[in-house]
Structure formats: C-alpha cells, structure tokens
Amino acid sequence: MAPRIRYVIFDFDGTCTQVEKVQSKFLEDYRKAIFVEEKPWEAAKAKLVKASPTAGWNLNRAPSTAPAGADPYILAGEAAGLIYRERKQEPPNVFAKVYDQNVAPFRPELHDVIEALLKKKIKVAFISNSDKTKIENRIQDLFHKTPHKKDQIQVFGGAEKFLVKELLVDSPVNAAQRAQFDQLVPGIRIDGVGRPIYLRRGSYFEALCATQFPIGETLVVGDIWELDLAMPAALGAHVHLIQRTEPFPTYAYELAQVAKGHSSANLKALLKRV
View 1 (tube, rainbow, N blue to C red):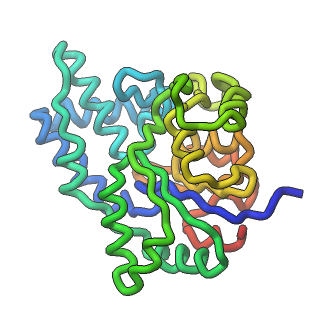
View 2: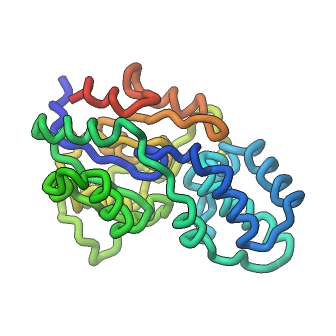
C-alpha cells in the first residue's frame, strides 16, 4: 500500500494558470519583440508543432528536455531559435519582458483547492522555472483576503527543470538524497517520442530536496509530464498530470504514463487523492 499523501508540490505556469487565455497575444508579442515577419514566424511554429513531441526544447543548447510544442513559452523560444539559426545569429532574449506583458490568469479553482489542502493539514509548495518573487507576489494576490495562508506555502523559483545536470560535489543535498539521485537512470525511451526522456535533472532534484518533503508521501502536480513529473515519478513520488487544452493539448503518450484517475482537466481532482 502506497504511503498517504501529506505533501503537494505544484508546478506553476500551465498547471495553476490558464495559459490558453494569453497564448495568442504572447506569441504575437514575442514575434514582434524579436523582429520577425509573420509569414516565417507562422512557418517556424507550424514546423515545430508538426515535429513535436520528437522535436524538443533545447534551451541553452541543452539536450531536448520537453516537447517543443508543449506550450507557447517553449514554442516561442524554439521558433525564435529556428529562425535565427537560419540567420546565423543569436535570437534576442525577450522572454521575461513578453511574459510579464501577458500574465496568464489563475485557474478559477486554484484558491479553493489550496485552501482545502491546507485545511487537511497538507503542506504545499511550488517549484517552477519562473522567478520566485513573481510567483510569491501572485500567490499573495491570490490570498489577499487571508494573507496568513500565503505564509504556509513554500515557493522555489528558477528550478531549471529543463537542465540535464549531475549533482556537483558541493550540492546542498545530503548523502541519502544523493544516493536517491544516483539510482536514476540517465534516460528512458517512450513509445511516441523519438528521443530519450532524460531523468537526471540535478537542479530540479535539488529544488525537490529543498522542500524537505519525503518523496514517498509527496504528490507532484504538473502539466508537462516529461518536464514536471517524469523524474519525481522515477524517484517514488505520487504524480498528477493536469491536462492542457487546445492549441497545446496533452499528448497521448503523456496520458499513458500516469495511472487512471491521476490526470484531470481540473485541479479539484487532487482533493480525491489526499
């Protein structure tokens, strides 16, 4: 029998926000910010969406660590990279600016779900690639009527989940945690994806350890299986996949990786698991 879930870790963008509400304007603003005409931009996006999920996210020239067409944030960077490689130039770094101009609204059920988890004495944390302070400010807005609730939630930003990285000799993890990481295989193969799914993501692992949540009693919630859930699942965590919507729907292979009842279109389903 699996241990009881006493801890929940949320991804932020897409998992707790409605990316579909801002994706069109985000992509258009991104295009204008990198000085690309509409026709080559649309062609680049279409090429990547067609090739995804075998085409992957290559941020900072890292190995592909998420589907290129999983969400507008990844797609924008990959499209810019495709176009600027043809120009033999580096694309402008405009992500933070355009992201801030297109703030995705929270999922409407998020507040009540977190409140219900806290009432059940479930400890809650966020681990995201996004900036820690920005997430904290948004959570403060979410709980503006009950600010003490925000103080019960841990936030870890800049997690760099996309990095395939070994633990350095001076990593803050302890010996037992390092032994856990050392048991991870470098990567696995999944039907429907023509590239490895890399598991040894040291920065993300360090963020998981920083919560001090026992991995076997923790539910990790994310909207991109490969990026958010594959490594935690391999470590023994419970996982829950939040299904994405058009025009960035969840891939069939992602749904196939989680058990029945462990994916949903709505965060309310989490309350049935704790």
